[in-house]
Amino acid sequence: MPALQVKNVPEDLYGRLKQTAKAHHRSVSGEVLHLIEHGLESETKPYPVPTGEAAPVRVAEAPRPDFRPGPGSPFANNRERRKALFEWMKAHPLLQHPEKLSDPAKLIREDRDSR
Image 1 (cartoon, rainbow, N blue to C red):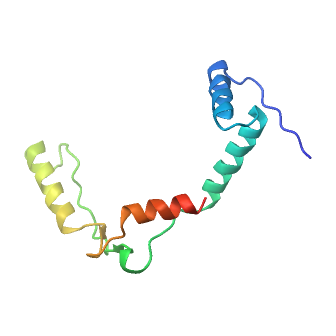
Image 2 (cartoon, rainbow, N blue to C red):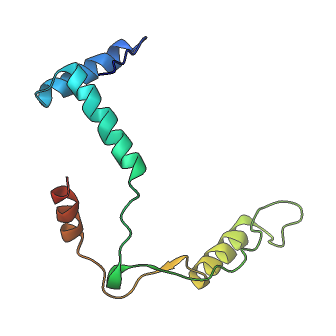
């Protein structure tokens, strides 16, 4: 089986690793393997995208006007600029959710049970 050696681990990081390993009843090596495996799994698994009634619907994006302040800005001051920006954001939402959204407790339970 391949071996892995990590050099120059900061003392505080190693201390936290030892505490975590002890809390999970693992050796430091076992905890490191668990963290690496869990980190790689979460990196390769995309976040679940809701389907069915709870799925967000993407609205066609309109070109966003230039709201940056500066000499060429059509806004007299920051207050007008912010007001125009918020009005544009209300008129062009990125996502619109249907009326029936998933129950957060159900989503958390499903995520917990999948582990």
